[in-house]
Length: 96
Image 1: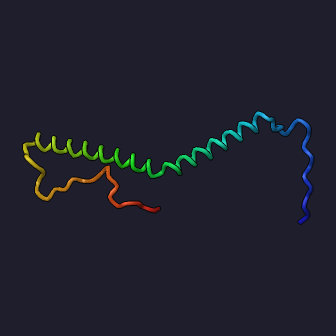
Image 2 (image 1 turned 90 degrees about the vertical axis):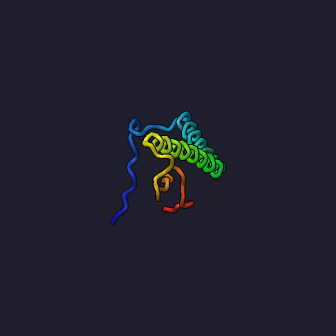
Image 3 (image 1 turned 135 degrees about the vertical axis):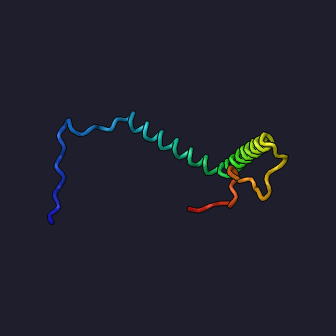
């Protein structure tokens, strides 16, 4: 097949790149780059914070379960009952 040379565009059809647009694009790219760098830098700190939040939610959940048992007339959990660990990651790091 023969390669065709691109036809020159008419004067008013192509949107010219203005300096303002280029600066906005550069700023957006730089902000994204800095944000990704920040996420990479604080990865383990964020993980620790999220684990702490999960532990707090789990404690609140277990306290609520205990309140439900006492309302039902039980002094402790039923025999063979293990509290589900809903908010705590039990299996370490999972890879997709």
